[in-house]
Length: 214
Length: 214
DNA sequence: AATTTGTCTTTTGTATACAAAAAACAAGAA
DNA sequence: TTCTTGTTTTTTGTATACAAAAGACAAATT
Image (tube, rainbow over all chains, first blue to last red; front, top):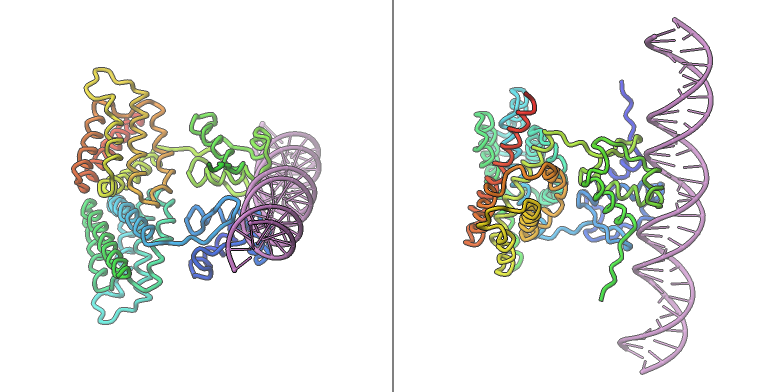
């Protein structure tokens, strides 16, 4: 019965991360250390540590001697992150195919079961399943270094704010096809399908960006 | 004429990184904050910040309340890093092909010019060119997020310690083929060749690992 | 001799203080 | 009115102090 105790700095990090991802700060907003520290009732040391963790995840940026700012995500950075995600999720799918257990495969399959053959899909729940699916692939791959790329997830998750970029009618079959390739043990196909899945999202984002420009 | 001034913590980070990459600490060695701080004549705050930067790059690990340790890189982690590198350098090569200028292309080509048609290649210089090539592709791609993945470089560079895994006679033609694909503007081919280049290295590392096991 | 408990020392996490740099504001000059 | 200079205030970077936790060592128990 182990007692779990975390550092104060980690608690601060989690709180700030939640607030940032919930848009409680404006993009580009300056996070004044003294103010945030006073707000949380802590000294600047654990806060500074938390800021560094968030900086590592690209949720904040540090300008030396000028402070920390909430990261502004422009379209270029968003596309960069999706491009990286395409590559990394591709190899994650490939590796997962090679190492997955029966149990893990069943869990993966169950993620989208509630949505199959449904006339109307609950978008909120589908988003959860979508995220759980992508997170699972990364975890199941067992690649230790991949776990470092929280930054890619942070940036690409910004796109959920406006709801889904592509509708479940479009992405669900793709998810299922990826799972099918994994089920068949076809690592190359799993990688290819996972990447195509990401490429289509990128293309749609690019279209939306071009539309906003005109 | 801008005056460049960096924080003390950044200087500490650079020094420690150099020392770690030069093997001045043992893998798994504990880096006692009070001792290192005294050694550098600084207080623990900038040192702690430097440690966090190094932790982000996976050069050190932090066990909460127990201190920082030099990262031990086992074979699994090494292969994980190469796998990620394969994916990321693949898309970097693809993007670079799409955005590279004539000037940049010439610079890239000049990297390996000193080694073409040479009977005997200076290994030390070839390693430098090899590293410069891979770094250039990442930089030239312009992908902002890719610049965050110093961690992959840190871990895979460990393999240079025993000299080159694969000899120039083998890798030079591969490098040149990648540059040729970039020159021709064939992004898909550039990505494919770059990935195959990495896959071959991974396979050789796996063989060496299996040999050590017997 | 091996294990457990208690005590002391060292290290880490956090708070506070101080110095340096940046930002904001006011006053003076053009 | 705008720009420049000087002063004050605020913020950030770093050093120091203190508390909590971990590690090392010694003594007691089995």
